[in-house]
Image 1: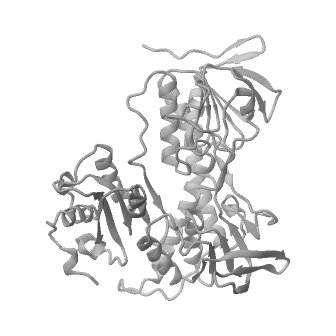
Image 2 (image 1 turned 90 degrees about the vertical axis):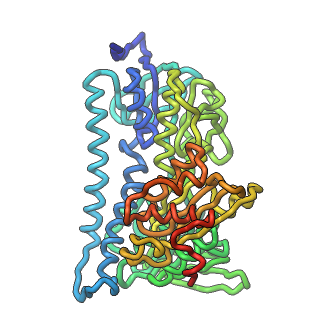
Image 3 (image 1 turned 60 degrees about the vertical axis):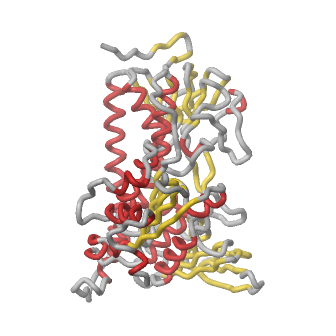
Amino acid sequence: MNEYTIFTTLGDVSRYDLVVVGGGAAGFAAAMRAMDLHKKVLLIERNRIGGNAVFNGALSSKTWWELSRDFDKLFLTDRGYQVKEYNYSFSEFREIVRQATEERHAQMLRQLHYYEQQRVLEVVYGRAEFADARSMWVYPQKGSPFRVEAPHFLLATGSRPRLLPNLPIDGKRVFTSDHIDQLEEFPRELLIIGSGVIGCEFATIFSTFPNLRVTMIEKAARILPYEDEDISQVIMRNLSECNVRFFTESQLKDIKVTDDGIWYKVQRKDGKVWEEYATHALVAVGRIPNSEGLGLDKAGVEVEPSGQVPTEQTQTNVPYIYAVGDLDTQRAGFVNVAEQEGRYAVERMFGKVRRPLEYDHLSWIMFLRPEVAGVGLNEQQARAEGYAYRVIRYSYDLTARGIAMRTRRSFFKLITTDEPDPYILGCRAVGPQASSIIGLVAMMIRFSRRLSDLTTILQPHPSLTEGIQEAARALLGEAIFRPEMHAE
């Protein structure tokens, strides 16, 4: 039976099997995998265990989205009911979000505390910096600095919102996704600068509530420009119906924050300049990695101008230093990727890798109106990579479950190789339960199964996964309900 080793201290240097810097999704997952392998670990976290995976990010924003989606059902008019009176409270919504994040935070702390009691894990709140290639200085929030050595280091320090020059963030009138829990009320007139995933998710959340208008500015011709046009157009149309307006092919030329609100100018493609007003502004122009202050130069770790750290299968140019999550250049911004990379890095350090880390079946979800989930390539990516491909779009309302749910503008989209029995290159689902549906396709891609394999799986009925199956059949010319006979 394997036994855990106990912390050792030689002179002024504490020694561990692994030092993990960052207690977010990647760092926590890495520490738990190291516990499986009976290693002694030092976990260093600057603020709160959970990081952006719990606070100010994945869990908190998705809880807001779930609340807004539930609230949105009050206004449906095709369900046989009509709500004439209702009340809602921003502070109560915010409290529910706080409860959700604290629940996950408590789960993480409970596990860490257990291993701390076993004296196989030590958690230190503070910051860390490489002293040289083999050791780090740890600066705890309480107590004196100390030096640690380990044969392996894992960097999982996450990221933070990118800011705009000359636009001060006060967290109340002008804020980022990190400041949502500091708001005291719903913004009446909200300007969202940036129309990527974060901007679109908060546009979806806030526009659900009455008497609130959202304005989005985007340099491209449409929001979510990295996705296929049919997807972004559906999202734009649905948001437009909920009091969201768009300045596309436009640039923010000037913005001034006053006691009365925010005044800004937008220049359109034709050169026209519009002067607009908002009560609040959300800056959502991407995120930057937290790589400064780690002393990476002292350890000889390469860093790109963006602040990201180049890796090969999570390993940096220094063989015993690994970087994962938002710090890594492979894939940023996904909690599932961060966790998987953290686990994989630990397995690689200690010779327990079962298979290489692969990203071709990476699945994700955007919490919009409606949900959008995907895996693999979209159509424009397949085209850019030079694939000879085939594509099929299949409506939710050709499935029994979709009809029962009274869905609209919801569809599946399959992209495959161009051959008689093709492989799946990618899939998109736009509609309710999209994230649950996309996992089936991710499995097909992961195990390199052909489209005909998907058509023969016995799906539950009625379910939306039947729609993915029917889309596959339609691409092979053998669908039960044939989309060309039901075109709008």
